Image (cartoon, rainbow, N blue to C red; front, side, top):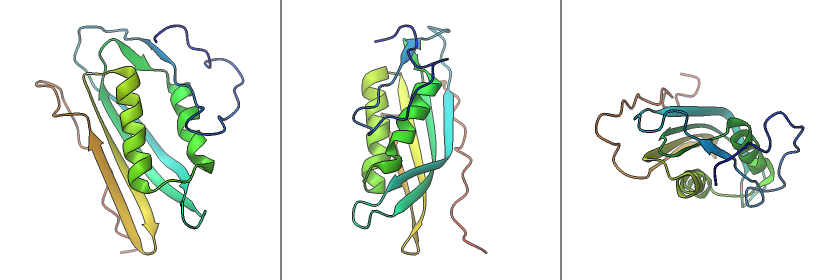
Length: 150
């Protein structure tokens, strides 16, 4: 599961789909320490499963590592693989969180998907694996609610 990163430092094409994308996990450099890691993807894209039109989101992923951490280039490639993937906001957001939680097995993980309006309605989707561990500092995700032009 965890080992030497395969993608870091190598020219790597974008995976064809989220299902074929591989994630690299490496040993946690601070095992036994409770801390939070945050990844933000403010330009995430996927496709509407009905119209095929692009959907845009700001994703925020927070997790408290256990034995492994996700290697950031492999995560970037995985998220980029959604560019040509059709999925509802709920399925995409929750699916990313569940895959990472299932493979990496952190103490805790949450994902916020702040989707830009489709049909005039912004959709925000949130998922977390459980209540955060006691003593873990969990800051606000820092993404303001959609306000449009006003």
